[in-house]
Image 1 (cartoon, one colour):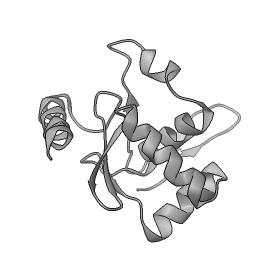
Image 2 (spheres, helix red, strand yellow):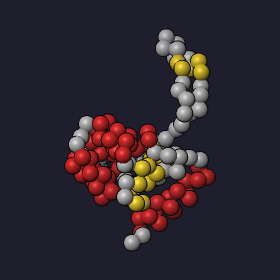
Image 3 (cartoon, helix red, strand yellow):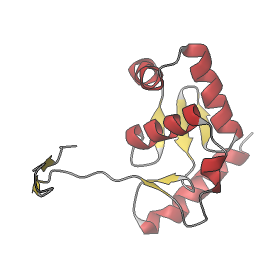
Image 4 (cartoon, helix red, strand yellow):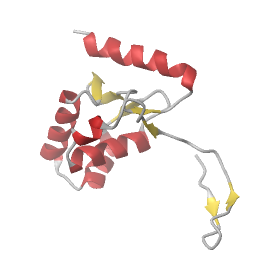
Length: 128
């Protein structure tokens, strides 16, 4: 990913590199936002920033420590936040340290891939 270079005096984009977009979905309203406390919302922002294009993120090693630094929490509080996000159906654990973000909340990709990602997330949700 490359960064944009913006002329601060005019707001003009001088150089556009590779752009990455994540969107917080609002088509079904923003009720999900009101369910989150400050740290949970900040955690979702971090996940939107760092998740891969398929909606997953590995939160182990450096990424785990980076997220803890971003949230300014220690490991116990970090684990509590992740557990709360799973309880609120914001994320699902795929394997230990590997999560998928609910695409109905934060989505990255094309409109045509949205349905596939929702089905993939729901399959994780109902796996035993």
